[in-house]
Length: 630
Image (cartoon, rainbow, N blue to C red):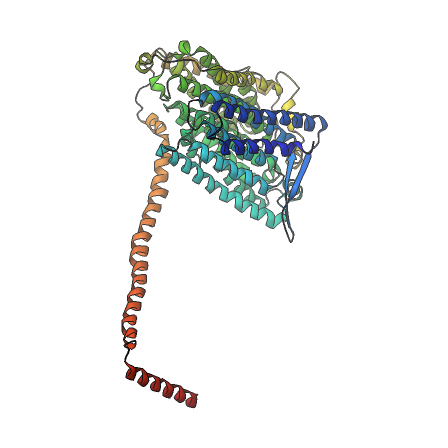
């Protein structure tokens, strides 16, 4: 059993090396099968580990080697499989396998197909290191590794300069957040003399709530999470990351990498519950991000960017749950969201595939009859993410809404608003793409076709889980059996003891109002959206406030004005004034002075013997004189 966590990282690493080193020799189909087989083996191992830690309620620790051992600093390269990491292993390998299989059909015509699969395996390798690590420094290796993999996959089609810009933007934004993570690690070691997560949690649990050192540490960790999980102000990289192939969007920017920030905070829950100020800041940032991204998504016209802003909004919803102290609620919605958001991205890829890479929804319409399987799957994903029963999103959102209403009526209404925004932009997308009358572009396209089975099969499996996984945690209104909460209870046991008020759930009577109000409004939204986007002219030019949302509240333009342009101005100033004028003049003056002195000194080398004798005598006299007076 100790060997299994090591095998989890060995197989995708071998897949990456084999595919990378033999990509010119291996056929495209073989590369896809090899990459998928590696993840399938990993899924089997992950299932075994999940069953082990679930049934035995044990933590499996696998020591590899002492990585850093200098003085009192001892950092082992060690893996830990507990209930939280085992859950993440299922998500990474389960959803990852579906995306790998899907990619066999989606990428089969791409000339760099083999390189693509090698990058996918590399990403899984680093993501597994991230969730398996026993200490923050090893976790940081995986953290940086998924950032590298993201950079490679976003800029996969590097011949288009815009894709390279998107990859660089994602890389730079994440490095800003990573600085906060690095500072947090220095502070953790300085104060706790360890970077092992469990040791730090045990030592921190003896401190008082509101400890200022913990507040600074958790704020720095949150900065890291903000970059990785695309929260305000570091969120604008994620929509641009849609430049990569659609499977990349599904794997990295929906199901796994962008949830790493939530995982980091959940893993450090003891530190955060002792820092109420940090939790309040997380609540504010998460809520603001969820609302702003949801409003932006309503008025976007790129099918992938709508889903990208949806991801940002859902991540904000997760941070809202964390800010309310509901780590279980955040992890439950992270779990369900992985299935239906991956499904939606892959279904969007199926639409793009059918329309020969068209992504503008204004050029779509009437696709429900042309690609009915994709339409059915998209409907399932839309219902699930909108929180309609009985699909998965209903159960996970209800858990967070319950905690929000328990916190305060205002917070509950705000959380409900975020949930309703999801319904607006998702049903708009559904109706415009599939049910609106065919656009001229669709009518002119005689090659609209359904996706192959290699793409439909993984989408169907994701759709099945999007429908059923919510039943593992049924609301108190219907059942006393909360399997997911019970499953993660040991992970957050110390956090609950320190702050017992966290994770409180409303009673049965209160849940009726929490359930019925959003459902009634969502039904109204669906009817309004159907009338607005199917029976009338679907898309008109935005104006006023709608124009502001369509232009993404000008976040990129604001950043360009207050950061990019001043940076360019300062760099140009130093280049032209300091470098080219002052430094160059100084260096040139040294060269000119050397030449001037050289012109005078070289006259001594005249070849005149009499002059040489005169200089020799003068030198001897000077030396003797100096010896006498000194």
